[in-house]
Length: 245
Picture 1 (cartoon, rainbow, N blue to C red):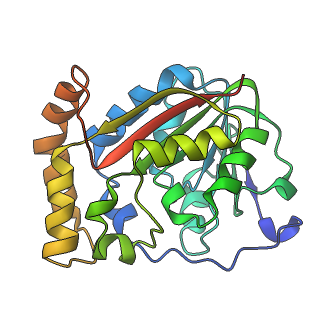
Picture 2: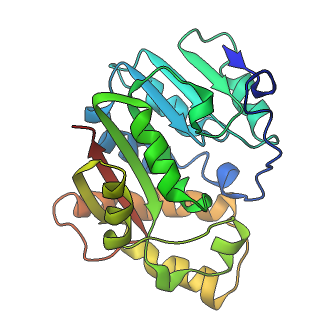
């Protein structure tokens, strides 16, 4: 079921997404399979996904047996039509072109997911507070964000990132809103060097599908398997799981 935000108090957002990584990562099956596995134990019957993009991770969420209802929010006017078409006719899914804001008046969910979203939001404190209000008591916040500020470069700028996180900065943001941290860990340590070379040395402004698929097929399987045994001291990304007590 699709909901047009033009009929909501928010009005239709004017935002258009300028990044290119959504298409490039669409076939990163190992990456999304791993991330789904990390979040699956915390996904309840109802899920809100913020920044659903073209629905790549939304599809993974729907593959988790516990999930019966998904509200997929996407504010970008150029990506929302893809999301809407992808889930047209699926009674489990409500697609809404909107930001996560109190005026949206969503029914509280069991969990809220945001994958590579918070770095795009200037006021991330308000976002995390709104997320807290959007889940039931005992619900979960599931975040995946870029890490290591020292590798911020042309790719981040091209993708519209305001920041990259450290454990300390992400923890502080989450806890200020009242969440209790259950897990906070760096992932994808080899990606630090890859991102640094791409964005700081080569000054790239896009990731090609070929590059994304190579990394997903050659690097991701063994890296994530190793990091499931020993948490790395640094990483290209951070995964955070928090609960509402």
